[in-house]
Amino acid sequence: MDYDDFDEQPAVWGVVSPREGGSDLGLVRETLKKEQVIKEILVSQEALRAMMSKVQTVQKDIDKLASGNETLQMYIDNLTVQMAKRR
Image 1 (spheres, rainbow, N blue to C red):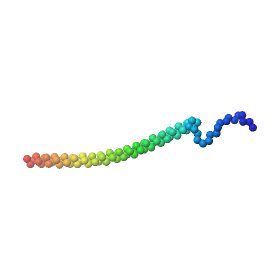
Image 2 (cartoon, rainbow, N blue to C red):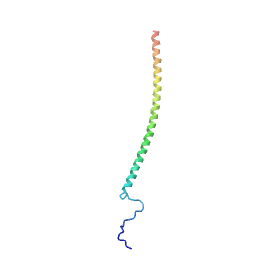
Image 3 (cartoon, rainbow, N blue to C red):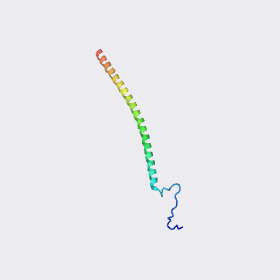
Image 4 (cartoon, helix red, strand yellow):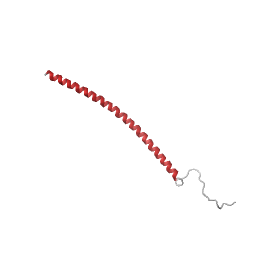
């Protein structure tokens, strides 16, 4: 048997080092980065939803207070008119 034409290359068993298979490692890193960004976006969206809910609650409170202020202002105006008529 003649082995002269046989190119000896070490067999790769197990994990390929990053230097030998760089393209796959880059793809994995890119995928992990994308997953991290997606997680951050989802967390940010949830925080924005919570803030929007708080803003809506505060806006409702402001509307109630504004309505109450209008009612009080009408009451004060009516009292002022009545007091002016009595003089």
